[in-house]
Structure formats: C-alpha cells, structure tokens
Length: 429
Length: 137
Image (cartoon, rainbow over all chains, first blue to last red; front, side):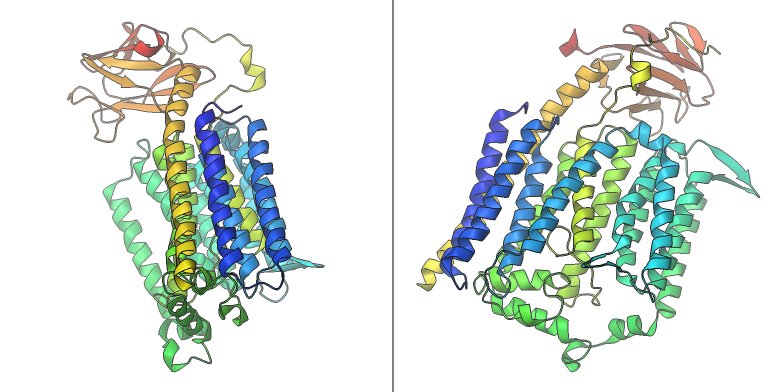
C-alpha cells in the first residue's frame, strides 16, 4: 500500500478528470459517425486508468508520481491517435500502450539494484551486440525494420536503453586506469566509446541518421557525468582534446553526409512543396489552421499526410487539439523528466542512467517538434509516448521504468550476504 | 456555439494543467518519503564537522578539499579527493583515495574500514564524527 494515500487519491482523481475533460471535448467538438465510437474510446481509456491505479497498489514501490504521469501521457496518446481523421478507438495503439506499461515494470525491476547490474555489464554489451547483428543480418537491404509476419520490429530502438545502461554501469570504474602507449585509459570508457562508434556505423548502414543525435545525446550525457564523477579526474588537456574531436567529427560528418541528408539540409520546403518539403509544409499549414484551440478532434486534414501519426504527430495534434494543448502534452513529457530533479537519485549509477534517459527523450522530442516546425531538417524520429510504433512505445515505457527505479533504489545486500555478520574492521594500513 | 466549443477546449487544457500541478505536488510529497526511507535504510547517519552536519544522502560521499567534494574541507592538509564513504551490504565503509596524509579511524591509520556509530575520523587536520542524525537518535 502507498505511503502517501492522500497524494495517491488526488492523483487518481485528477488524472481521470484530465482524461474525462478530453473525452468531453471529443463528445462536443469531435467528428464521429456514431456516439458509440466515443463511448468505446472513453470506456477503454477509463478502464485502463482504473486497472493501472489498482495494479499500482500491488507494486511494492515507495513513489508513484512517475507511474501516474506515465498513465496520463499514454492515455492522452490513445485519445489523440484515436481521433486522427475521425473518432474511433485505435486498438493497435491501445495494445502498444499496454505493452509500454508492462515494459515500464520490467525496466523498474531490472534497474533498481545497480550493483547487480554493474556485475552483469557483460550481458548489456552482449545485448547491444545481438541487436547489432540482428540489424545487420535480418533487416534486409539496409533497412531498420525486421518483419515478423503481421508485425515489424525496429531493433535500434531497443539499443537506446541498453546504451544508457552501458554508460551508467561503467561510470564507477574511473579509478581503474591502465597505461596504453603514453595515455592512462579506463577500459570501460573505451568500450563505451567503441559501442558509440559501432552505433554510428549501424545508423549510417541502415540509413537512419535521424536517430543518431539521440544516441549522441545519451553518450554526451554519459560523458558529462564522467567528468562530474569525482574519481574520474579528467585533465583539462583531455577535455579540450575531446571537444576538438567532437567539432572536427561534426564538420566532417556535415561535409561528407549522404546525398539524401544534404538534400534535407539545404532544401527550402516552400520552393518544393510537392517534393522534399511536402510533409513539413503540410505540417506548418496544419499548425496554423489549428491555431491555439484547434479545429476539433477528428476534423484536421493532416491525417491524409504520410507519417501523420508518428513523424509529424506534433503538427497533427496541434491542428486537431490546438497549439495550446500540444504544448501542454510536451509539458507532461518534460514533467516526467523533471521528477528525478525533484527527488534526486541516490547513486552515481542512477544519476548517470537518469541523465542519459532524459537526454534521449529530450533530443528525440526536440527533433520531432523542431522538424515538424521546419526549424531543423526533417529527421523522421518519433515523440516518445505519443507517436505510434510498438518498438518506440515499449522502449519509452522501459525508459520510464528506469527513471522509476532511480526513485526506488534497492540497496539491500545480495540474499546470500544478508545473514552474514558485518565485519567490525578490515584492512588496516 | 463556437464560444461554447472554445470553453470546452479551455476546460480540457485547464484540467490537464491542474493534473500536472497535482502530480508535481505528489512528487514533492514523495521526496519527503524517499528521504525518510533512505535514512531508515542507511541508519540516518551524518558526518559532524565542528558545528556543521553533513547528512549522508547518497551511497557514495566524497570527503576532500575540491569544490566538487560532497563534504568539502577547506584545509591544505586535506587532499582534493581524500576519502570516500560508501554504503554497501547494510554498512558504511570509508576508503582512502590515495591521499597524502591518510585516513585515521579512532586514531588508527586505515586504507579501508567499516564504520560504526560514534567513530572519529581524522582527515588531514580535520576531525569528523560519524554518528546517527538527531532524527534517528
């Protein structure tokens, strides 16, 4: 049972009220064929809310704010996705949201005990290796998708939380320095750098360079936490060399980027509205048509544009629900990321893990929104929790589970050691 | 009719806003709970340096002269990163981080030692007392 029953009660009430207010808006302003469509959608949303509230009572967790935020954003996402082009429950998205909730429990249980994770870091490296090989061998001709009958999987999505874990499990190894030529190096740092280069190669190979900034964000957060880690003792020379290497790599990458990337970098969407600028120009027109309060759920035109439910979902939501509501949707995502700031993690491992996860979600959200608004070239990445896609939703759920784990760390000794008496003194000098 | 629709949109947005605010308040309420649970799990220990108390609120606490140390001792005889306190296996331990002047626990030079309530740590010329916080006395 929760330790804050009043907070739990009010959170249940207000999350349900927020969903009911959205459903009331659909009932009055929405475009639907039959009222039963709205009732079915409302029933599904409220049922999922209450099942999750009851399930939360059985989770042996001390903090619940993230669980409430997760159900709030996931059911908002179900409502948005079910309204595009006319109100009808999007069953596929509903199922992926349930999968995201289950994935969050998995992430929570796997990441609570950082000492156990650190001792199993080879499994994390192996997981990244297996996914890499799967992408290289099973995706077909340089693609990011693996088709398994009726469903398709994007394995590169699952690499994101594993890479964040690889960054976090190695942060505590900074004192284990070894001499390599004339440099003192930490093997684990080199392994993480190697993994990052392998991911860069993989993203280039499967022509998914849009996701590269997300991985770069995870690595940058992991690197920054290494600098802040007191035992790392990075020299100023090392840091200056690292900064110079990053600038040089970015310049080379821009110069030698593939042709399709160069096209996007230099194209003017308004001079090519039927070609490269099609999605972005439609998205901007949709946002303008929606104005602050939106045209009404199901009444937008963007549902006829390719990838309206994932790549330009911010514009689709803005058109139907209004820019105000779309911005508040982003605010909810930002609050999810802010919870670890309110209740900070208790270990460097969890702090690094949380920073990497926050960097990944922030970069991904920013790429999608800024891409939709033509502030940066179009990247085609999803907004976590909102865009459709099973792999993306499950990964987002898993990452929120990792944030929950940082709020409820497990510091108990391993079962075998629990009954052993604590030594009084050890290792005098 | 349009005004009525606008009103509903505004109500939906306001409901979401209030919900977000309530969840932030929930997170703040849980911060207190987490702090209590942490203190319960780790014994609510503090390091007392003269009049100042440093609660051990993280599973790794660095003692040193550097600005980034958790327990900062502006004393030239203390190394920049002098010693680290870690919580593991239901006990706090202190480990010397290759400091110049060493770490003494109750007057004995140690490299690594498990700490008990009331232990006196000497780091450079500073004395620190490892003891239970007042809330847990």
